[in-house]
Length: 175
Image 1 (cartoon, rainbow, N blue to C red):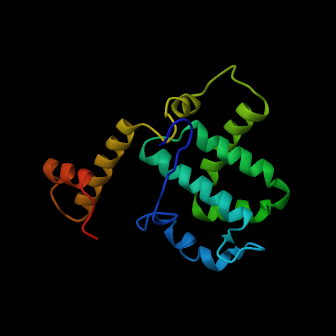
Image 2: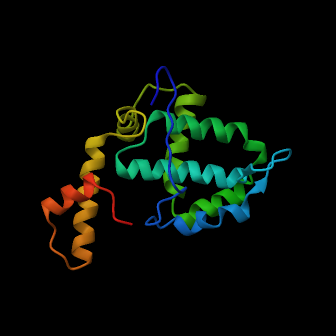
């Protein structure tokens, strides 16, 4: 984060390898096309890029909340490329990935806020989004991380340990 208004978020892959959507994005290079006039620039299809925006925000939502900026990104992208998006294919892919209901809810909020400027009544979900800062709340993320850790330990027939959880949350995995 750099003042006054630049925020860079870097990832080593589009989706975490533990994510159940990982396989969808694994062959994204095969689906992308070279950008005309550029040697090293590839572009995803409009549908795949929008799906990535939705999936990325869903991961943030699960890990600590989704902020206003992510909804604005979705809204601006979809409205700008609406004529280039195959909505039937998009709906099919969102449903296949299991994020269709999530996208629908967020899109309803996007239209309510950005298209109709309607802030008369705020739902619990809208309040959560407004209170989630840009990328979510650390406290929510930490609680979710501890729940996931406990579930992993139980699944692997191991006893959860507060010390191991603390170490895992501070230090990256050996891999």
